[in-house]
Length: 317
Image 1 (cartoon, rainbow, N blue to C red):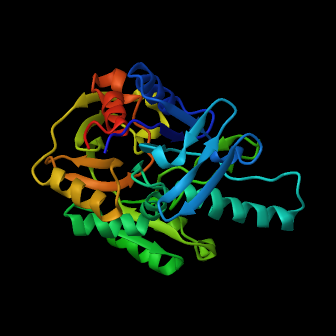
Image 2: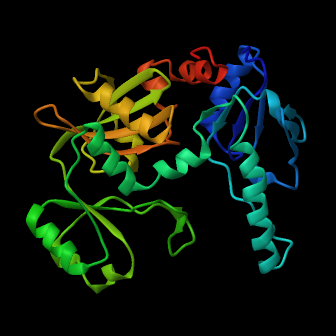
């Protein structure tokens, strides 16, 4: 089949990574329709007919219209959620549910569309317990990890492994006492710091790898880009100015494990984080199915924007 229809880019207004990819696609003459699903129904509308021939219909933004039957690919990034602030709470909950299963359901059911990544698959892969289990099955080295709401189990795990870090299981919007948005940091924790408040929800504790560097691996279709990140930071994402980058090759077995992991979740893109220890072993930390990657291209010269555009253009298909 000839893929000459538009690429849908579903993301929020402030997304520099998506901007770079869209510019690349425009330079190639590939039609693009960008929108935030959270703009529905204010400035976004759709009509979808389900017939014996499949889905027929259109999606309309203030400047573009996409034929739903001809969409070649979808770059599903980080759209905002549906909101209906003009409605009372009960009616708004109903409207949000209808929008999610209506518009969201249509976007997840487009015929012959290449999803980068499919929104349902993103949701599955964002569960850290699933990611850890699949990482082990795929052949990665994974640090000993405990998920619990039991303070005594947490204390016992920390005493057993001695050097242990705490990680959030997800990163929702969090605001400090001044109302400034922030994220919950990855921190080392001791047994003495554990109290009964642990019983209030689920927590993730992990044996700290004695690392000499980190590695970010970005898989885009069949392309694998490995970047070593040197710093003295426990979590390199806390200070980008302190980082040094170098392109590296994956050790034996890593490429196969990456492929197995992505295949399990039905993903064609993944941003993997590894800790590199003193003997050269790569330890799996996580895979973000919607992770950031574009900031590394100017630092390394890796053609990552072009690779993502190739995938969405379906040059590799």
